[in-house]
Length: 568
Ligand SMILES: *Cc1c(COP(=O)(O)O)cnc(C)c1O
Image 1 (cartoon, rainbow, N blue to C red):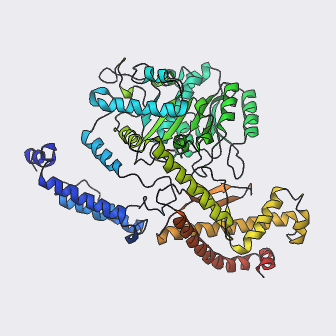
Image 2: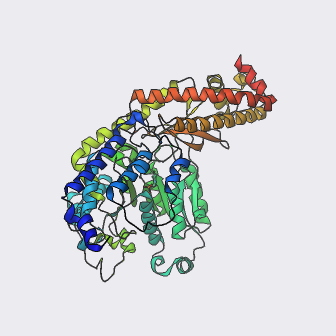
Image 3: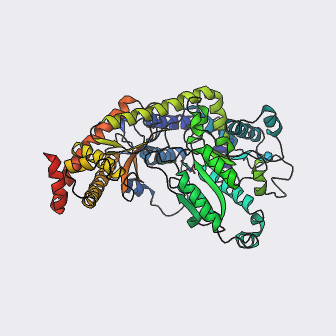
C-alpha cells in the first residue's frame, strides 16, 4: 500500500469515518460479549494453552498488510475469546480482577492523546495531573500540612515520588534511593569503589520470608545480589515478621560490619495478605539509622478506608512506600507509584539531558527509572474523582468483609483448615478430609505445645511415640499437598471458578504445606459465590482423597495403622 492511501485510511484524519466507527462498535461488542457473558465461557477459555498457542506460530513479520476487518476478526477469535475472564466474580485467585468500566474511556483518552509524561514538551496538562495524583497519594500516607503540599505540588525542586508501571519498578526505585543514601558515591562510582571507600565488605536488605520476589529481583539488578536479601522468619498463622529474630539479625550483622541498606515492611504480603507491625519496624529503623521501606503494593489502598487504615499504622514513618493502583485500587494494567517521605530522597536518581528533562524544569522524567511513559496516572486521578475516598472505602471494606466471611466458612467447615489469619482481602486454607481434620487439629496442638500439655491425649489417641507421630504427620501433610494441588488444577480446568495455590511453612515448621489462596476482592463476589467455590472444592478434594487413599495404604504400613484407627 502506498503512503498516501496509508495516511488517508489509518491516521487521524479518518477517525470520523463511518468505517472507523463501525470497527469501534464491532470491537465494543466483542469486548462486551467477553465481559458479560460469563456463563457461556470457562474462566480460562474452553481451549487448552497448547491449542491456543498453535494460533501464534507464524515466524515472520507479514510482508503485506491486511484490512482492518480481517485483523480485527482474527483478534476477536484468537485473542479476545482466548483470554482469561479475570473479571468473573468466581475468579478469586489473584490480585488481578474486575475494573470499573469508565477506565475504558480513560484508556481510550490516554492512547488517543498519546502524551509522553517523561517531559512537559510532550505532556502538558498530563504533567500536572500526575503531580496532583502523586501529591494526593503522598498526603494519604504521610499526612503532612496543607502548606507543605502547597509548596511541593508543582515545584521543580525535588519530587515526592514517581508514578511507575508497577510495584516492581517502584521497589527498585525505592531501593536505589536507599542504596544511594547508604553509599552516596555509588550512583556515580559504581559498587566496587564505593564499597571499598566505605570499607564495606557486604551490604544487605532485610525483609521477612513473606517478601515479594520483586525485592530479590531489585537487588539482583542493582548489583546488591540476591543472596544479600536476608529473609527474616515470620510467625505462623499471622505471617508477621518475627521482631526478636530481626533484632538478633541486626545485631549480628552490625557486629560483622555488614551494612544494612534497608529494612522492608510488608503491607500486605502477596501470599497471605498480612501486614507487618510497621510502627515497631519504624522504631527499629530509627534506632539503627536504617532506611525504612514499606512495600504496600497490595495493601496501600487500605489507607482509603477509615475503618481499616489502622492496619497500616506506622506507614507514615517510612522513608519510602510503594502502592499499586492496578491491584487493590481496581485500576486496569498498569499504574503504580513510589512515594518518599523526604523530597530530597529522589535527588540522587536525578538525570538530565540537554534535549529533554532539563535542569529546573518540571519534567517528570528527571527522577524516573523508566523513560517514555504512558499517561496512566489519569486512571487513578479519574477514579479518585468518580469514587471519592468514600467510594473506595466501600469497595475496600466489602473486599475485606468477603475475606472474613470466607475464613469463617472455612473454619466452620468439617473438611477445610484455615492456614493464615485474614487481615486484608486474601485467605489461605486447605482441603482436609473430614476423617483427618479432627486428628490433625489435635496433632497440631500437640506439635505446637511440644507434647507437654497434651501428652495425655496423645496416649489416648494412640499417636505412638513423638518421632512416629512426626513421621506420620509428615506423610499426611504430603498427601494433603498432593490432594490440594490436584484439586486446584482440576478446578481451574473445569473453569467455573478459580483460586490460586502457594506453599507455606505453617505450624509444621520444616514441612512445606500446599495451600489454596483466595483473593475475594471483586465487588460482585458474595457469600453465594464463596460457598459455591467451597462446595466444588470439597467434592473435588474428596474425590482425590479417595484415589490417593488406596495407593497410600499400599505403600505405608505405618500409615495404615494410623488411618485404620480413625477410619472406623
Ligand atoms: C504485586 C506486588 C509487587 C509487584 O508489583 P507489580 O505491580 O506486579 O510489579 C510487589 N510487592 C508486593 C507486596 C506485591 O503484592
